[in-house]
Amino acid sequence: MEVHTLYEGTYSVDITKKFIPFDPQKHSFKERPGSLFINVQPFLIQLNNQLVLVDTGLGFNNEQGEMVLHQNIRNAGYVPEDVSLVLLSHLHYDHSGGTVKIDQGDLSLSFPEATYVIQRGEWEQAYIKPGSSYRTEIFDYLQRNAHIDFIEGSGNYSRGIDVELTGAHTLYHQVFLFSEDSEKVFFGGDVLPEPEELVKNFVAKYDLDGRLAMEQRKVFGARAIAENWNCLFYHGKTAATGRVIEEAGGIKVISS
Image (cartoon, rainbow, N blue to C red):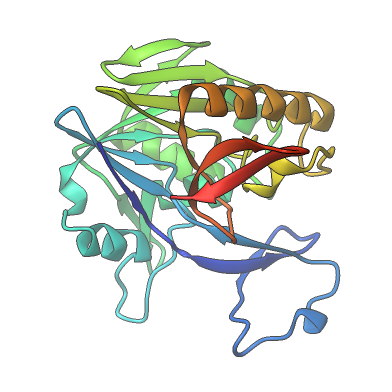
């Protein structure tokens, strides 16, 4: 199994939920009071002879008009058409924006050969409770043009891919465990977006049910230690990937 981190950038996010690029070499934290500063990094996984993309970032374009996500996939040695599965933990814009390419208002599928795997309940919630976190115009286009596999609940999706419906961050948030031979890779989406959340127990305000998310992180942390998972952190700043170890007084994440 090969894992590639597709770093899309660092952003500040304020109450408007707009993602504004942030470069600490050019910008000041003080200039953006009340903002949350996060990294956005989808992951590309070569698994059992298929190429899997896990979440899709914001879908922003570079100065040449190419999607940063596409550029990163090419840098990893592949082309976007190689992607056969797009797994979406949930449909908030920073995780689903890259499902389509937007060029001067025109939309096209970012991964025309892929199957997009989405929890049916998450899709329905995006329309029941639309807001700035969901971009339903993107979903409308996907529904008309993409091959979508709406799944329900937890279980084995395909060889080497297990799905667990967690809720907590959104009502139908899901996480993924990838297995090949003796190797296991875990993607926790926004239930486990940063390594620090394994080390410190706290209730996050950005979760639908912060207490449930906190309790789930404890369970995932214990399993990561017991089964030697390589964990992928979608919003991680200190580490994008890491293994969890137990040490005196608590646990620690070692960047992998």
